[in-house]
Amino acid sequence: MNKIAFSGENVSISYIWEWYQTSEKAMRREKKRIIDAFFADSDVEDFFVGMTREDVDSYFEEHKRELDFLVCFDIISASEACLRLDYLSRVYEKLKDPVSRKFRVLYKQSGSRIRLSEDILDAWLEEYPSCKSVIGQFRGSLHLRDWLAHGRYWVPKKIGRKYTPVDVFDVADRLFENLPAEFEWFAKENG
Image 1 (cartoon, rainbow, N blue to C red):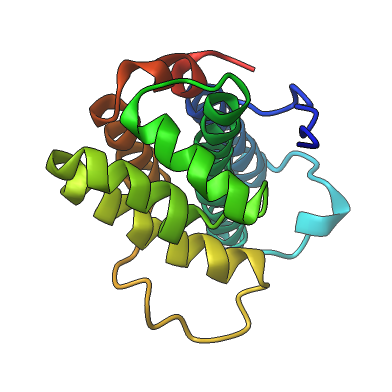
Image 2: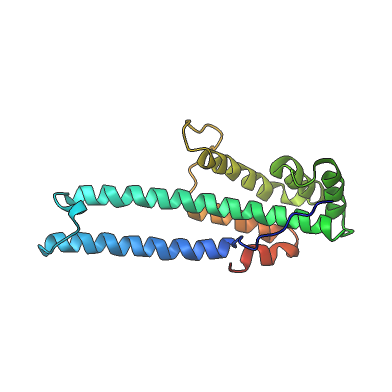
């Protein structure tokens, strides 16, 4: 069995959330600085010269939208990394619990090329049917991840709802809170 070397570069959803809050605050401060400069007749960067208040609002709204998309993508991707790291760790450590046994069977069939939704999440669902709702909600967010990862070139039909970073964080957080405790350090540790 060729083991995958873990990079250690993965980050927790808590870390991503903290980064998002810091970035959002910085963006609000910059917007306020630009608007205050307009009213004080102070110099602003050349880029903003000639813009109206509405233009500045639109500019920062668009950047906030992009920040929100990036954070949603990052949280979902980090969650996927947690699930895949857990899968591989259970296989490599030859754990004996029912989920780990299912994972070892899947590993013999697919190795590290395991499917997240159909294999990993299904295995958890079989052993923890009480988690059907949180797993279903997380699966719903995977449609957003796919749309974002592939460049947003189509009108998304499967997403089903508008996700905000708060929504995506809550979905991922509930998933890790409801699955066994082994996930806690994956989801909560910084960096």
